[in-house]
Length: 217
Image (tube, rainbow, N blue to C red):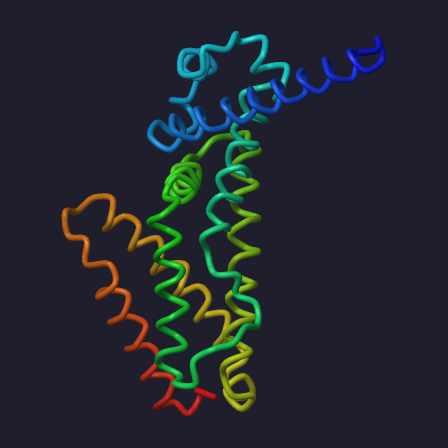
């Protein structure tokens, strides 16, 4: 092995170790923050959970605020991996089936990756003079998700529905977000796990209401 090859291999190992340390920090922070919120998450707790020195945590993220922001982004990407894309895709022909399918997929993603929703709600409920970067990021993520859901509704409703009520798709998107918030709290605080049935009742009830309005395509 030449000196150049050895140096390249050493650099590669160092980068891999750095990536592994960063991921370990993010995973540990997510577990802590989803349970304790912003104020309850400390570098000392992250250090204890990962076994890494505080200097390593600060080297990767600079500050607790930036660490929480990076953790929220990390948890969001994990959540999106299980969430519906809300982009155009083959859909069931029946309108009720179409709506329920979307609601069920969203509910599944919420229960499969609950840390993102938990951390986000904790950040939302906090009031402080200086907003944490993570809270600002969460607000942006929710706005983006709401826009994506609104666009999906626009694609499945009749054009006449939008003409008769320009705010209809916005209200439907906000209802969906509110429903997911409530469903998350119900699942986390209750022994009743009949999530699919609850989601089906809400989705099909909403779909039938829209059909009676003549808004279903």
